[in-house]
Image (cartoon, rainbow, N blue to C red):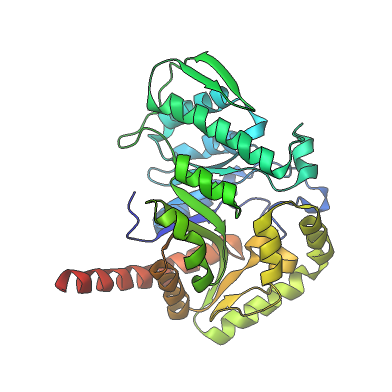
Length: 362
């Protein structure tokens, strides 16, 4: 996978079109059930629009991401699936076995979004009582184990602080035409996330900030040949005025979630989530970058807002500082993805082509 063009990913629709609260919440006590009819349609549309993959995220309020991916993967031929994984919830041997098995159905269209967890209370739901830094240590042991299984067919031995494997063997290989293992995003804003990306990952994924600040943040991973990515949302319309009106309406529609969202931030031990909340004090920290929905929608509520040309130009601005992967969200979920894919992606691809031709000419 190259770092010289932009890769667009989109968060899989879950909970219906009307749900806009934080991904970490299951508000109103709704059952965490798949909506396969809507999700299959969403995946097929994403593939048509040129979206590279969809994020199947993980928390107590949603179905298991690996099983949900299995139910969807054969509905499309090229679309990838980013499976969210937390290191403490499953044996790394069994997890690798599951991912390898899944790869046989998808010919390797599997990405991993490895996160250490951000909520002590939710981690305890799964029997995980480790602190923030200890969870990252364990994630290192976890990725070391998985990587050894993917790199060779010999017995795997791991003597880590949190994970120990003796003579581990797996007979089901990872199946792909062009790679030995899934593409790995490492999520998080702290130094341990950077270290894990450099050692085991392919892309450091974090919450968005202004392009200038992101350039400084990602320097350690980009200098090591790794990719950098951000999570954010998009509100694009034919005019800037219309886009801003939609953004303001989103605030009105989600005000009821503000108190719940504030409690979520207070309980979190995630550095990036707390920094994200601080960023929301400035509604427009950069042209066309809007933080207004963070306090009601959640951390990924930071959004690029504007007309199609403005939104496209903002992505190019991020690319110039080294950001090449974007995991996006929007509201309404399916309609915003369709609008973005139809109107914005072609502009961006044209801009990239012009830039590339200029470089070739010079």
